[in-house]
Amino acid sequence: MSEAAKTLDGWYVLHDFRTVDWTTWKMLSSEERQEAIHEFLSLVEKWNKTQAEKKGSHALYTVVGQKADFMMMLLRPTMEELNELETEFNKTKFAEFTMPAHSYVSVVELSNYLPSDQDPYQSPEILARLYPILPKAKYVCFYPMDKRRQGEDNWYMLPMEDRRSMMRSHGMIGRQYAGKVKQIISGSVGFDDYEWGVTLFSDDVLQFKKLVYEMRFDEVSARYGEFGSFFVGNLLEEDKVSHFLHV
Ligand code: 76R
Image (cartoon, rainbow, N blue to C red; front, side, top):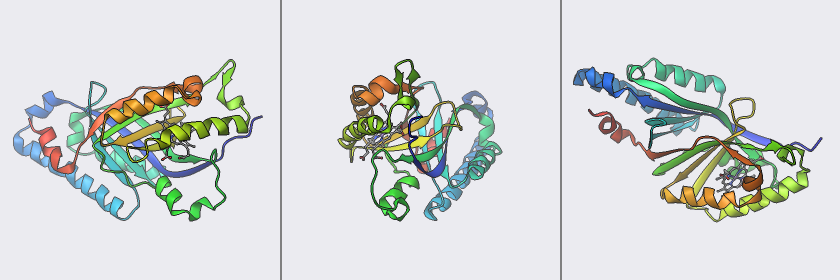
C-alpha cells in the first residue's frame, strides 16, 4: 500500500447554491418582500457576529449562468453547526422562494506533501489557512475535483515521493498567482461526491481562467485531475441584497 497523505483539517464547509423563484417572489406584496429580506439580513447579521468572534466565516455571491442564482458559502467548527445554519435558512420566509440548486459538503484541508518541521498548530499562518476568514473578493469560482484512479493513471497507487514531487510543481504554479488568487482546498472524501472542493477568490475574474488553464498543463492536473461542474459568481454585499431581490 502507498503511504497515505496526512491531512490537517480545519473548519467544515457548506457551499449552498440556490435559485430564486422569481415568479412567486413577484406575487408577494412589497411589504412582504421587505419583511422577508429583513429576516434574511438578520440571519446574515448573526453570521457576521460569529465571524467577528472567529467562530466561523461566510460569503455571499450571485452566480452567473443557469446553474444557480446565488451561493452561500458557510464555514463552521462542526458539522452540526452547518446543519443548523442550513435548517435555519430553510425556515425563513425568503427560503420559501428559493429552490436548492446544488450543495457541497467538505472540510478545509492542508496536506503534508510539502512538509515543514514546525508544529502546524503553533503556526499562525497555518491556523489562518485552516480557519480562514473569507475575503471580500469581487469574484468566486467553485468546483469539485477528484484524483484519477484508472488503469496506469492511479494517483493513489503512486509512491509518496512521486506524489510529493508533483505537488511541488503544482504549488510552484499556484505561487505565481499569489496576491491575485486566494484558494481554499477542502477535502470531501466520505462527505460528498468528489474528493475535494476548490474555492478560488479574486478581484480579477480572468485570473481564474488563467490559473486553472495553466494548471491543466501540469502533471497533477493533466494526468490525474478530474473535474465536476464549475460555478462562477460575483460578490453579493449585504447592502446589495435588497437591490438583487428588488422586482
Ligand atoms: O498548501 C500549500 O500552499 C502547499 C502547496 C499546495 C498543496 C499541498 C497547493 C498550492 N495546493 C495543494 C494541494 Mn492546490 N489547487 C488545486 C486547484 O484546477 C486544477 O487543476 C486544480 C484545482 C487549484 C486551482 C489550486 C491552486 N491543491 C491541493 C490539493 C490536494 C491534493 C492532494 O492532497 O492530493 C488539490 C486537490 C489542489 C487543487 N494550489 C496551491 C493552488 C494555488 C494557487 C497554490 C499556491 C498557494 C500559495 O503558495 O499561495
